[in-house]
Image (cartoon, one colour):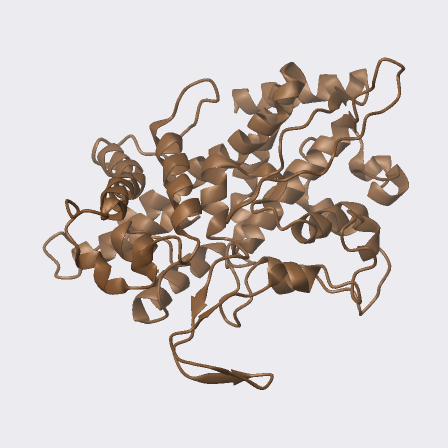
Length: 412
């Protein structure tokens, strides 16, 4: 992908890197901090941001889509850089992330630009007629450089002043070799990129008893998860149903973050050697697309695959595939390592919201429910189109608990 990786310099995302030693270093360093047994240390950060989400939902429930994407963005920025993101202010970090993602959504479709077919075109001067792609790439190159450099430089300056709060970036900076070391610049580049790499409910008897999903703790303790089968089914079905990368309308920065945790179904992979699959000869250099949609919508595996039915995971059935087989990457050894944190984030926000809020369809003038249509945007990254719903606390006790939990958080 010459346009994306070489000209726009999306190489900070190891999803876009060619397999090799540089890719393995990125992958290894990322996995050290986000494997299954490491992500528990991020749970306090996740629960803190979800508490803030619940109170914002109480004040302006109609803005739920904005609140969701802000919550995921704030979680990542706090965890990666120790930077607090104010939902009422324009963040330069979020702005650049959104712009970078917009560029990727266009150029990430292999073949959008001729340079993907004829790599030699990358040497054409930007002033040359027909070379507008070079000028476009130069713009996004600057955006992507700011995307990785600005927050990292901010933490470096904070550490020099003795004001830095704990974060992944601060940990990485502390581990850098001395500036005079020959490996300093390479190590700094690697560590600068790593923080950037890291963004219907049923019957209550299915969700869990009121002891487990009641009004005593918000957000719910992660230790409750094994006892909440329907919540786990909701998360699986959300991963499978529409492959709307990213899940639950994770827009803007979190889309960008999770792009590295998950794998968009339309990103191509180039075969590094001649190969054969199911009788088909695949020439070295061929662009191959994994059809995750087909895998997760196979009618012989999933009954009525176009319907959102979490119940399909409640009864043990070896024929029903776990969405993880395709939702988090299709290449053996290249399953998205950030999937565990992504999964925890989904669990935390879903279980906490359902514990204290009722979510219902709006009603018409006759009081009849108007179920929203399941509509999504198209493209490399797709999102749910805006829709309306009614979100209200399940009781006065639930509302009081939301306010109390935020008050306790702010006093910590």
